[in-house]
Length: 248
Image (cartoon, rainbow, N blue to C red; front, side):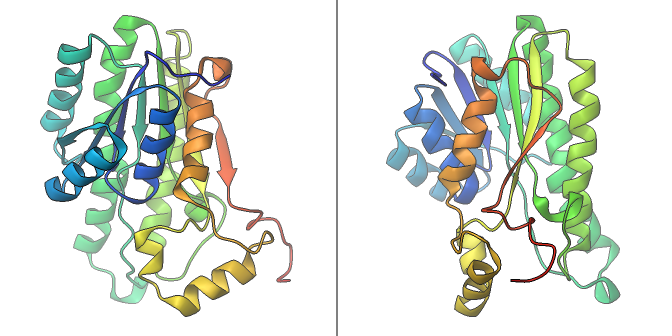
């Protein structure tokens, strides 16, 4: 089950963290996997480590998103799976947040999702087949974190976009879903320091942080033919973080 052999998969923000974990899982499931990101040095290293292809891409450039999809189709003849994963999460408290701080996060996280998904759907509609998986977050839709109101708004916005887009393409053989990670051990999370990581583990009912591959397994399921009757839905992958009514 969940065999992706012969499928062409594209992962934005795939050079590190959750995106790298998704790429690793899809590759292991048999997909021809292409990762994208803005850091070409890191991208080349990740591509070599995972034995996947890399292409540079800034998801805030609409023309570049279309060009990236066109290149994939030109080389492989189709695009079966898009994992829209590129995103940023700088901390800015509301009292000090500038319009530029807000716009930067929304341009990458939300507008970048729109640009890349739109470009992929134009191809998938012609094929009458496609799987789109968006990496959102529990932050915004379910939880909040002080200093991340712009991030939470962008992640909740992704889910509103996902649900309406799923309706538009439901009769085209295309599903559009999202994964909502909790605390995942990535380079970004590690940068918060040991005390934060210790507190995060203690706050999670499983008393452990997730791995990027944990998100990859959920994405792999949603990208599979077995998930063909699931669209406009979310899967929370958080070790039970959102469950307690009161702190344990």
